[in-house]
Length: 385
Ligand SMILES: Nc1ncnc2c1ncn2[C@@H]1O[C@H](COP(=O)(O)OP(=O)(O)OP(=O)(O)O)[C@@H](O)[C@H]1O
Ligand SMILES: [Mg+2]
Image 1 (cartoon, rainbow, N blue to C red):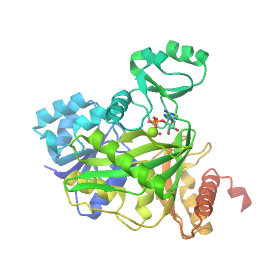
Image 2 (cartoon, protein in one colour; image 1 turned 30 degrees about the vertical axis):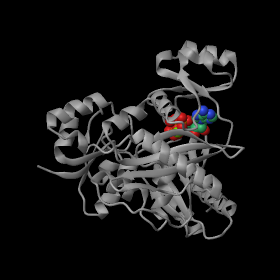
Image 3 (cartoon, rainbow, N blue to C red; image 1 turned 45 degrees about the horizontal axis):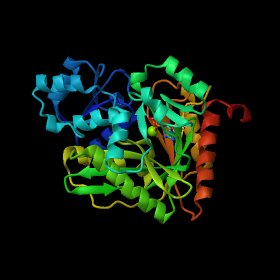
C-alpha cells in the first residue's frame, strides 16, 4: 500500500504549499479534495471525494501517519466515522477534531473568547439580536470565508430584510468594531510550547485580504501578540496546531480578536520569502511532532494577493510573470496552478522584501507589481508592444 507521512483534508493552495514544504524534507503526502484538479493534486498523490464521503476519508486515513487540515469546513461526524472504519487513532489528527468543531461555528468561537476574558465583539444568535444595538455585523455561523456570509447592518430595514432572507438559527449578530486597522499573526502551538510569527497589518479589498505588511509599532505588536497567543490557546484547549489569528485595532490602540483559522493563513504567505522557516514548514513540523524553534525572525516582506481580475486569461500567466519581474527583479511570484481564472479567485500572490526603512514606499512598490501583473494577465499591456 502507498503510505504517506502526512495527509491533508482539502487540496487548495494552502495544502499545496504545505506539501511543497514537506516534500523538501523528503516526506510523502496525500490530499483529499472534491475537485479532481486541485492545486495539491498537481504535485502529490490525491483522492477526489466530498468531505462527507466516509469511505473515501477512511481510504485517506488508512494511508497516513498523521492527518491535518488546509481548511476548516470538513464536517466532523464523517471524519470520526472514517477514523473508526480505518482504525485511525483520533490523536493523529492535528489539530484535533475538537478544535475543528470549535472554529466551525463562529458563535462558539466568540463565546470561547468572551469566556476567557479576551476582548471580542459581543455575539448572540440572530434571534436575540435585540441585545445588540445598531450598527451591527451579522454573520453566517457556518461555512463563511472571504467575507461571504458577512453582512454589515446599519438600519432597522436592513435587519428586517436579513431576518426575512436567512435561517436565523444559522446566523449570529455581533457588535460592530470601529477599527482603524486589521492585524494578523500566526501562532504555532506545539509539544515544547508556543512559537509566534510577527504581527502583520492586513488591507482588505471587498472584504478579502489584498495586501499584508509588517506592523511597525512595538506597543501594537506586543498587545496583538499577547492576544493572538491567548486566543489560540483558548481555541486549541490542549491540542497542537498552527493557527492564523485575525484581529482589529481601534483608534485608542486596543486590539480585538476577530477570528481564528486552525491552519496556514493568507496573512502568513510573506513567510515564504522572509529567509526563515515559513508558516508551511512550521505547519508540517507541528503536525508531525518535529521540533519547532522557540523564536522566528526574518526579513520584513510585503505580500499582495493575485486574485483573478475580470478578463484574466489563463494563457497570459507566463507573460504576466515575465512582465512583472522585468519591472522589479526583487518580486517573488507564487502561483497555485488553479486551472481556471474565475473573477476574484485567489490564483497566486507576490512577495517583496522591504529593503528600505520606509514601509509606505514598500507597499506602493508591491501594489505597483500587482497592478502590472493584472494588466498583463488581462491582456491590457499587449497593445503597447
Ligand atoms: N464585528 C466586526 N466589526 C467590524 N468589522 C467586522 C466585524 N466582523 C467582521 N468584520 C469585517 O468583515 C471581514 C470578514 O469577516 P470574517 O473574518 O468574520 O469573515 P470570513 O468570511 O470568515 O473572512 P475571511 O475568510 O476573509 O477571513 C473582516 O475582515 C472585517 O473587515
Ligand atoms: Mg476572516
